[in-house]
Image 1 (cartoon, rainbow, N blue to C red):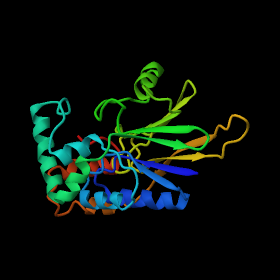
Image 2 (image 1 turned 180 degrees about the horizontal axis):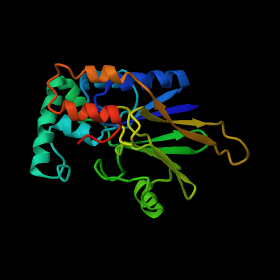
Image 3 (image 1 turned 90 degrees about the vertical axis):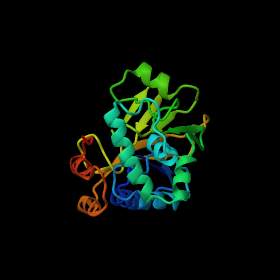
Length: 251
């Protein structure tokens, strides 16, 4: 069984379209979406519509909560200037979405656990199991990564998004995976990113299923994504366009 995990689309419909096509080519049987459908990119409405059409599990990211509820979470804005910028972009994004789409974002679930044959379970969260804003990096110590991401679960695998930096890490017999970002990578590679997990049928007396995990990088029509900003009135189009081209965090 092949499972695909995508996150952090951020309104980049061209990247999402390419990733979904790659998932079809990989013949994945299930797709899970780990949040942050909108914000930054020029086509938030098309991303929400495409994700809803998947009829699958979709988690709430910090941006989905922010945009859907029209509330900035405590600690998210780092200064009064940052808060003003967030509110400006939040207003632009909300204006592109129908009331029903905003309600959809506001009501998305926080986490999900996937149970597979062979007693393999996978915990899914956007950022951490504690909240949608905390950050766990690939450079964090093993004790922190295990203590935060595997707290309160017997799951063998945890998959998350949020940091826009894809990686796979083995920790004391468990596996931590970051999907990277579909629409706005921060690792210097502008290609869209998602995670693929493939499980085998349980074998032997233990009945334990083996699995493999990989990160897929998908080139897409960056020119089309940039062109979609034209006439959009996006308040920070230039910085986001540069981030899309370079695979670096917007400034």
